Length: 278
Image 1 (cartoon, rainbow, N blue to C red):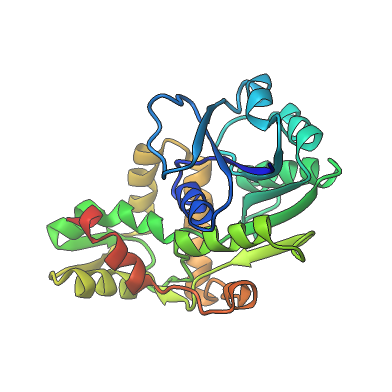
Image 2: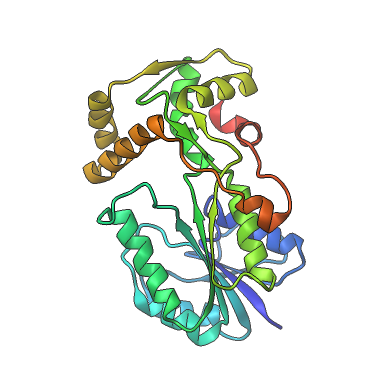
């Protein structure tokens, strides 16, 4: 019996991929670091493995894996992982990123392009799900929301944040249906909303008073560098947000085309994650 291996099975997107595949009646293996501790839906088999030790994936891929969902966290790229997937499976769906707003020499661009290049050369049938920024990144504001004021730069930056479940649903279609080979799917939310509008929506959906306060970019650079520890990434984010004050982050029709329905909006995401803000 063929199975689908989910690499990144407990991540913000991967857990929805696992759940949707299981609900659809597919045989699913979930790659985790510790199979004994994994909490997964009924019928999903936990298999141990680690991307930093490619050979550890061999047992997870053996005996019937036909397709692989691949999410690669910020770890060094290991070409051997792609080679092993290609040896055992026929199809891979890679959770990539829409890096159109970044310079060609940005680390994120180089990282995703390298993995995509390895996959294209592997002989696998492939689909790249290039997600815009996740709506889940709004949780960075959770503490400030609880305090009633969100201080952030570029309140007029218009973002098309995407619900993680929509990313997962697109990935599941590509894993389980024909017709997606070679797809480069840029997945976004249904509209571009400003940072300030996003804060207002969070407050409305939670039923709390929360206001926006503009944070000067230089102050934001200092605070975000201290929090994230990566000055280059902070600078790239600030440049992108500034650009979105002039030209909104793009909105695509990918979810509608692939799934036959509109994408979930930010309000639905906030309702799904209300407990995380409280």
